[in-house]
Picture 1: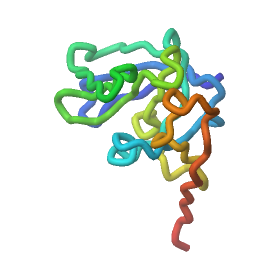
Picture 2: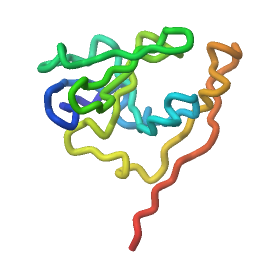
Picture 3: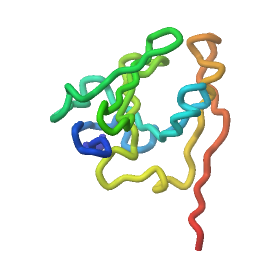
Picture 4: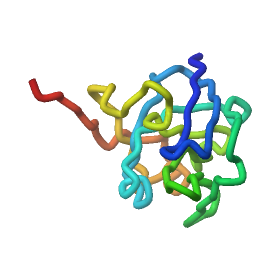
Length: 137
């Protein structure tokens, strides 16, 4: 497990998190919402994220089935984490909000098929592709 600190862009929201399996759980998603948001996320158990400052600045967005709850800083608009629809006991944490981490640190990021969500299809999570980052030399 990897313990990290993080924050939104303006610093109003600050948190501590322990990631389930470090960065081995990173992913993106193709659902309509995640496609527009474009964040790389890593997994954390619900009990393993603690807002240490600015809980009152967080705002929540739900859509479709209302199962997933997406959290943002109401001041700077940065998405920090969300409760997963596929497993409501897990959070997806925006790796770009973690201190010292960038989504560009990962050469390859699996992209899950959120358009055909397992909760809708009854099938296992499917990988839709891989997002690759190759720094210019």
